[in-house]
Image (cartoon, rainbow, N blue to C red; front, side, top):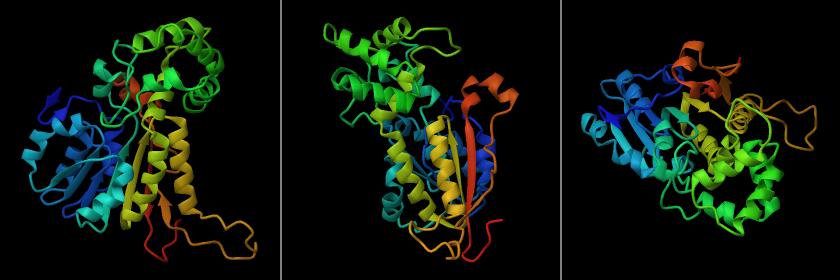
Length: 318
């Protein structure tokens, strides 16, 4: 659903993330996860009258519904159907050598979860799909129905941090011999039956998360995108990343730390001076949602925001 060209989607930590970029007139910005356009709109308004926003999204549906926003800002908003791992190539094709700020809002959006035909949520029955880009070939059903038991267990454990992954994988392999998995309800029902104990989260939550991340190669995409985003920043430019998963947040944290305090190459003489810092970390601890936002939007509970600023050559990080 769209309101004024923007999906009715509650962006988490939106004010903190956008203000952290310090948008200004004449600036160039990238919303690497355009989604419903809420962040892009906030940046456009803050960078008036002539700031430029380049919005990327691998989900063509998001861009299709953004027409009213494009009509509102015809010269200031450019939308590209692409995963954010192609950020460098896209900026080069647009002849934008560098930008003042880049924003990532990772994971799946609430409006994607609401579309049962996309298969992201076990709360609504639908095909076991989970592809953010409908043009990509592999679906969650294909992974569930074809991966060997050990690989399936490892995937659910590593990406979903599900401690009952081996028990669940064993049950999946047993059941799929008779009836291949085709729907979200089918897989969620199995998780309810197999995963023991009582937990505040649904038994299928971690498994669905793991499958979605695997289908869309989310960690690999993020690692590539972070490198390209830093390289695309002007000195003094800022990068803001909102994550909802511990593995993603850990990757962002380590990436920022390695730029702020670059490690010496392996085997290097310990007396060698430390490499110069290339990033100032502006969030020593990740920014999290306050109680009011969590009450308004429970999804905000797991959100973490980190912001870094590319240093001017020779500038100290502290």
